[in-house]
Amino acid sequence: MALIKTPKQIATMREGGIVLAAILRELTATAKPGMQTRELSAIAAQRIKDNGMKASFLGYRGYPDVICLSVNHQCVHTPGSEYMLREGDLLKLDFGILHEGLHTDAAMTMLITNLDKDAVKENLEYRQRRQLVAVTRECLERAMTLCRPDGHLGDIGFTIQQHAEKNGFSVAKELGGHGVGKELHEEPWVANFGKAHAGPRLEIGMVLAIEPIINMGKGGIRDGKDGFTYETADGSLSAHFEHTVAITEHGPEVLTV
Image (tube, rainbow, N blue to C red; front, side, top):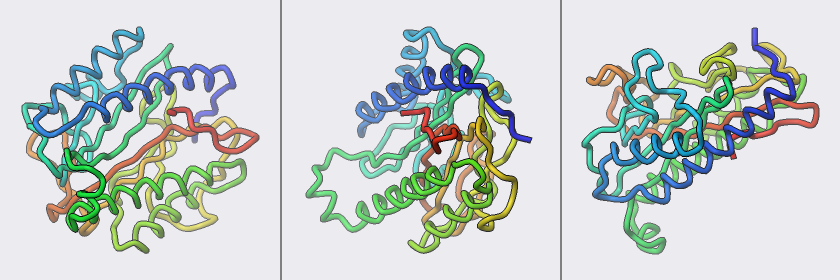
């Protein structure tokens, strides 16, 4: 069963989510070809400290970093490393903050490039990569609009899967979203596939981390060599977006903006 949050708890999560979103914006503005992903980890760690908060991910099930920095075929859960970002990489930044005992969680994907917008538009490979990013973001946006009282959990997964597949992409079915709050991962699991009007009803006070993980190739995943990363089984590109969303009497409220 999902844990229902009080208005006070949601307000606290909103405070953490605002800081989380600001750090993600800084990281996406900073990431560029030639940077090592561990440099981004260091910035994230310092900003958490600056704001007097804690990292949700560090130490969680042994995870060694404050942020996940997955590249290209890596779907999720990649620690920062000496890997140097290259022109054309797809970088996924997945980040959580613990504020006054409550977690928020968000992620985004960006194209690493020094090219201007016109040059990117003229590059077929880059256009395809940006299309994957755009569709994954749209999957999240469409799913968030469904976070309303008396909706169904299955509506979220159904909408994500339908939009991804309509655009020629696939869902990593083994990976999905989750409840979030006192724990980083709470019930319910929020699948990125499903049946419309099926599953548990959504209730006021539920807070969900919705995170479509969409692949350019087939949907299968496999374990990476580092013991933390999940990557696409066929080596295809993957994109990932996530927000923490509260279900209120007025509809969805995104807490990580």
